[in-house]
Image (tube, rainbow, N blue to C red):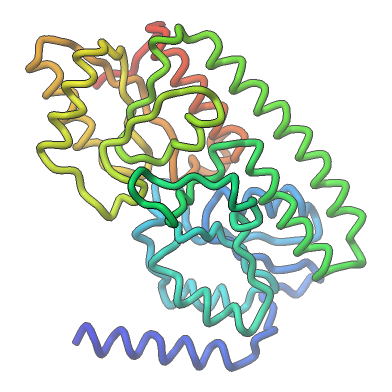
Length: 313
């Protein structure tokens, strides 16, 4: 039955892709842009401004590593004038859908605009790149440029607006990058260790001089075992790391297990708060934007590692 349903889904996808590939979902002249993640959608909103309408398929708390396109998603993608996604295998379960639709309409993996020499690879996984590129604000500007270029090519009548909007947002990203560096500088060097549920923050650590340790690998599809929990707990107790962090898109159970294992070793580590990794916060909140998400993360991390506040539970 499962095999039949899978075949039926892709059969419907082929039909959708072949029927009215340029059937836009807007009637007011604006470009209909569909993005996979909130971070990519946020770029499109800033660059496109009043000339686009943007739909992000993956909302708050959604794990893009495990996300599968629904029939409704496929319909939204079919009606898009432009499809934007992160790429670098972040949306691994959607790969075939994006590839098929990419043959019928403009589709861009914005993360792949970053030079390969700037991409990080997990330890022992040469040739496989970490997809969490948005955590280096400087690198995210390459993705910004990719969105700008796609909109300019697709809608040259508004090219000047897209270029102006992108330049203004680039200046905001430069200010954000400086803010992150300044906040990290307030944390004692021996406390600059970020411990989270999965290894999503390698670019963050590399760019801003933080040691990063994730309980799981770069994909949440791989679960942590008891040995992983105990190894991380031993490190925290030995180094007397003051705080560890839960992620909005990953179950807190594993981090709670680490906290308990640390306590059994005679050291108390606090939950320093919830930070955003693969998904942004709720729409309408500061954390529901890329800049707000990054500001929340670094402000929460720096305060907890300085020992000023925790959000233990």
